[in-house]
Length: 185
Image 1 (cartoon, helix red, strand yellow):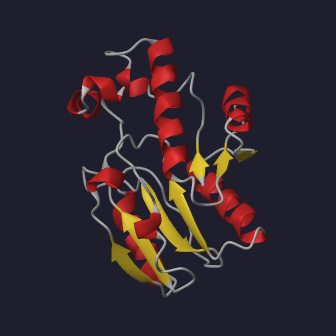
Image 2 (cartoon, rainbow, N blue to C red):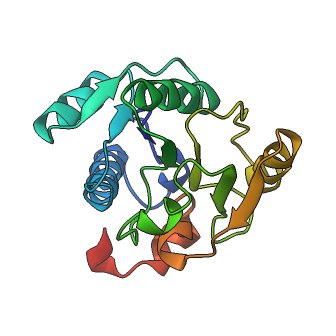
């Protein structure tokens, strides 16, 4: 499940380095990369943005409406995948330029384990994997890594932390963009 609010309005914290069209193009390139990394799995984009939904159709990826928050998007994506028989749900942010595959976060299948990939700042949660039928409540935003670990324990799920640099590196601030090779964006 890949939530994408908008290409045109995304990456606002990079405005000092990239104009609006450049940020939109970057957002789309990063999202395409994440979709390719997820190609081995049933994938759904959660977005209400017309451009994002048109893009998803071009990529032959399902898209459902964004209910308004990242937590709600994760809930709706989990429900969509659960209805399709998926035993495990992976929520991956659309700005992971180094992602190659999500296989390492799916090994637990329907086991009562939440897999958390903390971001490279050890704060956010760019990738989260959990049983599709769990009662896990999402808590995205600053500090979500620790909140997600606490939530897993609260609902009786084990926690497995995966520190994979290819899944942990997300592009949020100018320093992140500077850390990428120029050809990466």
